Length: 185
Image (cartoon, rainbow, N blue to C red):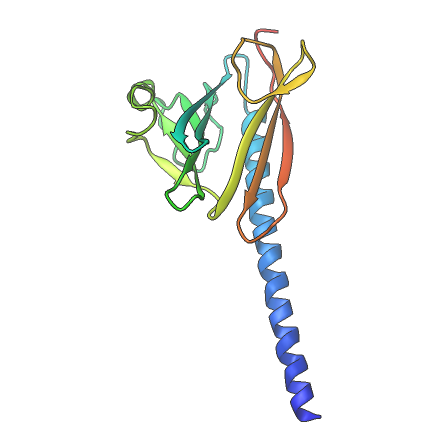
């Protein structure tokens, strides 16, 4: 009876630990989505979005979503510098197959250097985001054709931006859609 009680307490403790870890991971992902939502809401009449991706081989693409002229986007105390003109959300593949997610704070000079090297050389200040990321993808809604696109090529009016993320460990994917007022519409 005593052995059974200890086994039950051990199993309950392990279950509570797993539940707590899942709740913490879920809260981190939700805070990230809310930070993205706040960044898109911080856009103004002078703001724009740009999207670039670079083939790293093996059907792996590093992606870089830039919020241009949005000074309060992802303002964690890093982008207080008046010269910061771009806040870039990066999803960069690591050798182990995971994704390194970062926010880069770039001047135009930083951006030109990064762009010339296809973002392989990037000296801009950054903040690491969610660890153990396995999916971080963007899609853009083309209002003319009424379909979602994987990139912004074609200069179409885009008012909705979709973000999908997932971390390792079999967690479910989390998807959110943000509004962006396209100044070209």
